[in-house]
Length: 171
Picture 1 (cartoon, rainbow, N blue to C red):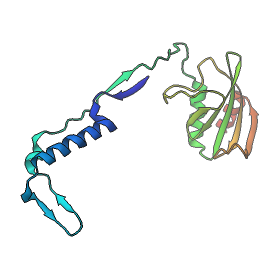
Picture 2: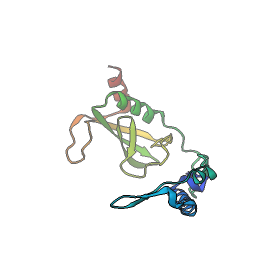
Picture 3: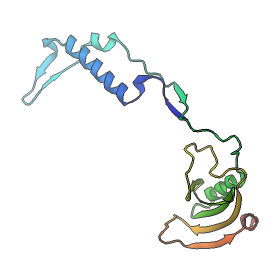
Picture 4: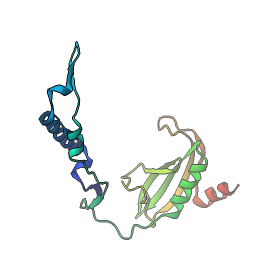
């Protein structure tokens, strides 16, 4: 789903249109008495009647547009990933590399400073949607020193199960 402005004036094209309209009003209402010259260029002021004639209304209303993707109703919310994201917010000097199985396929997820990103597939555009579906089973968690640099990974702990990681979190 894409959220787009409902009003045409709330985007670049709308700003360009506003500029053209205000320029036309300015040129139409320009009087010689409001123009003065300097040695380098001529500067004109906008008459008060042109400024107050038509106020620009730009609403911030938005509309939701379906981009054609079928939402998977059985995707669900993964509480384990949410717990790991919360942990990474408190321990900001480390990142987590989580390996999980989703429908028999192995998926890798990087979690750093409360945000998660899928390394082996697509990450959802919607930040409210969990990176892994509810049916995902976490097989191992690697704690690495942050910030994460894929060329030089410094492991703190490697190959932890989710239960072992929960015990580490409690300590």
